[in-house]
Amino acid sequence: MEIIIKPDASAAQEEAARIIARQIQNKPDCVLGLATGATPVGVYAWLVAQHQKGRLDFSRARTFNLDEYVGLGPDHPQSYREFMRLHLFSKVNLRSENIHFPDGLTADIPAHCAEYEEAIRRTGGIEVQLLGIGSEGHIGFNEPSSSLASRTRIKTLTPKTAADNAKFFGGADKVPHHVITMGVGTIMEARECLLVALGAGKAEAVAGMAEGPITADLPASVLQMHPRCKLIVDEAAAAKLRRSEYYRWVYDNKPAWQRV
Ligand code: PGA
Image (cartoon, rainbow, N blue to C red; front, side):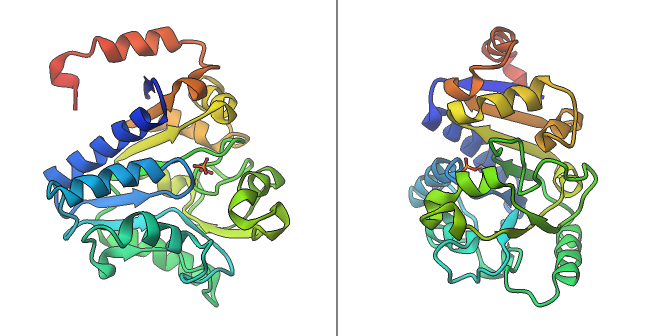
């Protein structure tokens, strides 16, 4: 895992956005895995700004989002589909047929999840997967105890996640209990993972996932097994990393050929 510590949130978000932009430029029909939440907002803002300057063309890119709340349709203001419309889809030239999302209103969740997995497979697989991390270590909505081999399925949110997301719903009691999320195994098949973590509230999960044991108790820790994973954090989220001086040295002294 490459660990990149940036001075602040916007520098961390820009680092992740540059990697995604390079992927789109190198392979215009690339398959991107996208995330929601407060963390990627600045990533999308940077990509939108590049698109508006004529530097980034999304017309052939394909996207798969990580998760959606069960019971919320695409028009619900708190649905992740609406979040993505607001922050990215309505501002760039992604084609609607190239956007893929778990359907929070599906009548048959297992069949829909299997179809979602199949749709990812048909594209040849996700090339770059953007990830946030929950304060208890989830990726997607794979909460602690999730199988590290899991596929897209229904999950139940922990009380901590409901509390963390209460601000978007006007109270933890209004956060849906269930979600559809790509599984840990699904995420692990992406060719590259970019996990962005910002703020002191993520410091413990970040230290655990990067330097602790691999455990379903902190699902993001499985990324230690991923052959190509970048962890991009701001100073506050890096505060509990034991080897931060080493990570900084590695990043600052990368040979030019390695700066991709
Ligand atoms: P956040 O959520 O970006 O809103 O902190 C991250 C996550 O839950 O994965």
